[in-house]
Length: 259
Length: 59
Length: 227
Image (cartoon, rainbow over all chains, first blue to last red; front, side):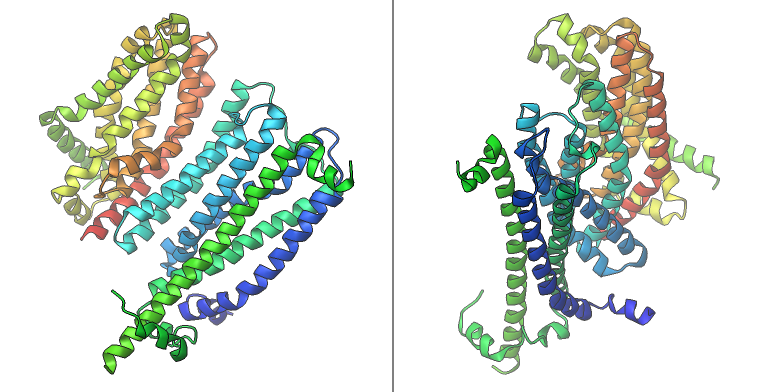
């Protein structure tokens, strides 16, 4: 058992494992997203309160859930990196940041598009939207700090500390903002979240959430492979990979002039 | 109004529903596409390193 | 060295240095006053408008002034090698950090707090709210110094550390801003501000428990990366 776990600390193994797993995850992800879209856009009935506009829920809620989920993954990976010095955990954290930021942006954009018909304005300082905005700033801060520190080892450690500080603060920030928004807007319009959801709407929503999660897994696996290749570029196992050491294809490369 | 027209009309909310799905499509595809491009370029760098090494060893 | 001996040693040293460098505590204070004074010029001199926005304006300006002063928290000690010596001294780095943060607050937070009644008058804030304003600034700026120190540790020795520091610390300081200005608003409207101040005290204790340890870790990373 421990031997099995230990293999996940070995870069060549993870590189090959991720390469073998990614196409399958990508395929299942596509199938689930398409069936979720079919059930959500065509089969599911319209909402009796919000009409057809509620269908934005099928992209807004998965994006919002993933935006927070990815940050938690990033923080857990950072903790693993700081405690056990596992380089792979740092690769996971680094690879997750841009994906999480893109989901956060998506949650904000679709939330704003949903807000226009529901609230009558593109932006409202609603507790959840404001929390998402602050989460986006946290992602930007993480990526900016990583980019600013030249020494790769200290960049990894400093970014990990920041991710942990962020994850500890997220609940505090979230509840402060919720409290603040109820203070300033006593009559907020509730979204779907507070009501019981009918299975004809719940099943497509569940499918979309799983689909988004698989998409995150797929992109994460590819980004991890990229990270491993970049960090281990001098290792002999990289030079021996069939996709790298292909004499037929490489003969083309050797002919060209490079700087 | 035909069924297909009604579907794209989205009960009058077409201008909010379809941009949401479109922007989602763009973000998801960009995520997959960018990660694959970056992987290919990392792979290409590794290949170049191998070729340069081979040249150095037997010029 | 005992805990208090170490703390007082660091505090006395940093205070002595600060006494010779007046800009360190005068500049954030001037910045605070100037920013607050700019708001009536921007939104108009009507006392009714000003008294509504006064809590937010004073709090946002205080937040920015504290952030501005954070750049100097470790930077000079880092540049002349003192920080590395402190790291090698074998004393608890978290305590050393705590001492430095307390001095930082004494030089940046405390002057803001003392000048704030004057600015409250400029912004037509009801005089009844002034004690709560000062109390909220007392608790809040101390929390901000503790949180900001983490950012100062993480950006140690970087180019353009100031801008990056603000980007890292501003989202984390949102709770302090929310409850600080809410306490003053409540006091100005003649409601009690007890619950807001209690939450702010909670935030301070929270920052006190994780701040120095995290900052110490960040400083270690920054110093080891530069050598």
